[in-house]
Amino acid sequence: MTAGDIESEAEQPLVRAGEAVPRLRRLSTKLLILTIVSVLIAEVLIFIPSVANFRLRWLEERLATAATASVVLVGNDASTLPRNVQNDVLAALGAKAVAVRSGGDSRLLVVSEMPPQVDEHIDLGLVGPLDAISGALETVLYGGDRVLRVFGKVGDSDKVFELVIPDARLRTAMLVYARNVAILSLIISFITAALVFTAIDRIMVRPIRSMRSAMLSFAEAPDDPSRVIRPHPRLDELGVAERELADMQRQLQKTLAEQKHLANLGLAVSKINHDLRNILASAQLISDRLRLVKDPSVQAFAPKLVRTLDRAVGYTESVLAYGRAQEAPPSRRRLRLRQVVEEVEGLLGIEAGASIEFANEVNPGFEIDADAEQLFRILMNLCRNAVQAMSMDKESAVVRRLSVAAERQGSVSRIIVTDTGPGLPPRARENLFAAFRGAARSGGTGLGLAIAHELVRAHGGSIELVESVGGRTVFAIAIPDQPVVLQDARGVLRRPA
Image 1 (cartoon, helix red, strand yellow):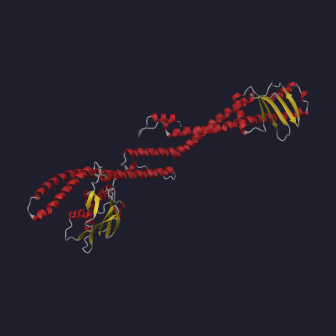
Image 2 (tube, helix red, strand yellow):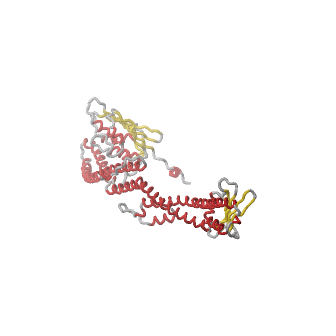
């Protein structure tokens, strides 16, 4: 295919889904044309040598006939033969003269008229394949009035027989032979092409057309299980492609169903969250008035209530923004991690005499480079999941302990959250950090771990489940310090001249 063919095809309008492909552009039509052309090329490659071989056989037959006639002519004096007999011999051979050489002697047996010149000398014993082809092409293209001198041995005879013969009859015979071979080649080409096309059409084209129809049908209604392709039990590449396509369509249906569920859930959450934000705004106004109350107990919990409501209002705004964009980039500062963990402990609602023990094992001087609000959300989600998991166990003798520790490894801060709960079930471990699939308890959504994972990733860090067995679950959070931009650091340290 040339560049012009590619450009001409590119200029043609594309076939849309569901439209019929024009007959001349169908794969089956292209396959049929390609098969016919291929077979014709193969026939042409056979045709030329066969015509050249026909030319040699024709000359060999004439020379053999001349050798047979020479037996009679040599046994009798050729000069005593009547002229009409000599002419009949030459007419039967289509020759001008017949001669024989034996030893060093050459004898002209019969001649009608000797042509003034001979155009080509052909030694039949020394003609190679390329010489035969070139001689055949010369005869077909330029022959008709040329004179050939043909000589060679016949059979086991040691004599060399010669013919001086015009090539007009040879060229006519070659043209008739070429016509017959061409007609036969065309018939063979079309029969072969039809057989090959039928076989390839049944083996390849029809399955491909069936896959195309199945894909178009699936595209019209991807949520319809009946539109999934039904693969054939074949073991070749097309069978594998059909099975892979069926698996991909089923997986796509599952993904679309989940996406639709998430979209519906997101719309419902946005509506509920909008109204909840208005309610929290009213609660903020009431909490602000509580600050004016002089009761010491009220003054003790009022700041926590105000911070909690402010944080809740911030969450509702971020939920409304979540459908439009991802989490905001973290605004990182140097933080005292122990104070953040204390805020988490205060909002978990664990009473002093409760059966769940909270252990803040972070060193008071430990510092971490992170966004304070996002770090609070990360730890709050992990700790709330742990508290809810341990609260499900009602056995009084079971130890229920939640601990948060931290360590520094070079420029990376590592936070360890450990609880003595029942551990994560296999389904939650397989879909860890996947919303709505990684829930550890019945009725859970798995959003807590998904949110924590997203926020940690925004800090350039990682969160992983280190251990989860009955009685011990460990999550590890690694947050690296912000990299120092060398150019900015030089600008800060550079002193004015």
